[in-house]
Length: 569
Image (cartoon, rainbow, N blue to C red; front, top):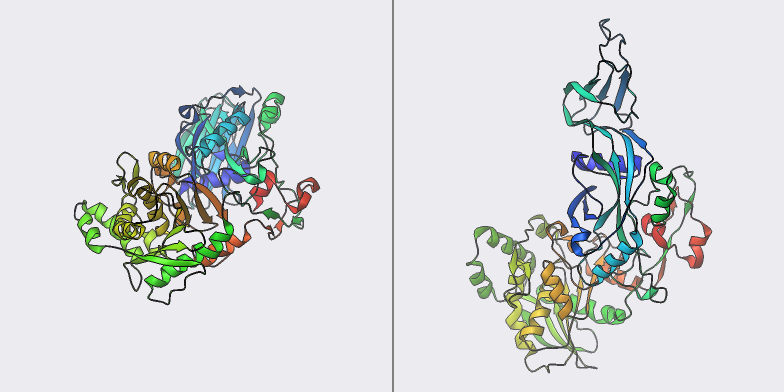
């Protein structure tokens, strides 16, 4: 692990705060971003999104000191102490020795707290942005800062790193780590990866908050389970840690912060509890249709591509096969620069890793209602595809001005577009058309839904994807959510595909997420999503969590709710 993640992970675990890395990096209240390997990556400030907030400042001071366990030795040297060789120290100092790489010595003296006062109001505004498609559920907001009068942060590059610091003033008799006026300088150092020595004005520690569902497996951005109470979300500290000592001394500041559960470190290891959780679904999500039609249709789509016997679910008849046009794909690739060509070809290779590579699925009619389902398969083995994955943004050519989309996904949709359009010829405009896709097929389906609605004259289009990646940038997301009124994204825990392309580069999901928990060896498989669908709406017991005691009030009804339930699962 790189230095930044190691540094942040160690300080968060021991000091119960997120670390700012490096600690002299500018950060402000209201900054939002994502956690990437424990390091906070800033994307902007909520004020840029029209959200205002008030700030409250504490006056009490505290000191945070940390050294990596078992790998850092430090010694305080008073002025006049006899050193090796019998020479007395001319100045007071500090010596730190490391016995492994990426070990940390950290000291922040004279820390005061600055925090967002109206956190609840900020949370309410962010939930609204989430519903409008202008916010991601995994965005974090800086809601509290620890401002240090003096910060010292040393990290080792290898097991033999060391550093000797000494007082700038020859009059100083001894080093006090909690002295906010302390000024040190480097006398000598060897193999250090980070050297920040008694710098003033740093913000070494902070608290991050994010929106969470009140149950672990809850869809976002809204919950039918909490419509009566109006509390589908909580905006709570990401780390579930109690307030800093400085904040705790200030009653107004403590009262201003949101309430949340804290898991004590001192609980005996024998203490444990079993967590039960409710797996929720939106009121208009058709779970039975997903189990009895969507999964079987996707299986049939993969069977077609693998030259296996095709079995249609009862009550559905195929009105056309979805086939890719290699000629159209090759012609489109010729117009691209080499880097973009390779990115597109990687997507094509993933989709064509089948016995019949041009076969992508079916357009079927539901016999009971006349509704149409467009079923598009993707890839069941995404590892190689993700290994060489490159996201190239490009204007969505089918609908000018609609926004930037993933170039490879657009080309893949174009390769099957004529086949889908031909199958939809003669379908009345108001007929319900559900675009269904798994994996790469989910991305193709999202783009296809817009094209079908805007260019093929079909007004009643909805979408359901399973394990689909992010497809477009912010403008595309906004326009999609305005055009397609019903879009559900099923994501399975531990399935990596829904997490690409990276949100760090402003790629966005569309529609409403339903997070399922299908405990199958391959979390991207249809078997995993089928298992997850069957769990929706049930109360499920999770394995015991050691070292945690839960108040009886939180176990009412067999469901652990609130932030604690979310944290421990």
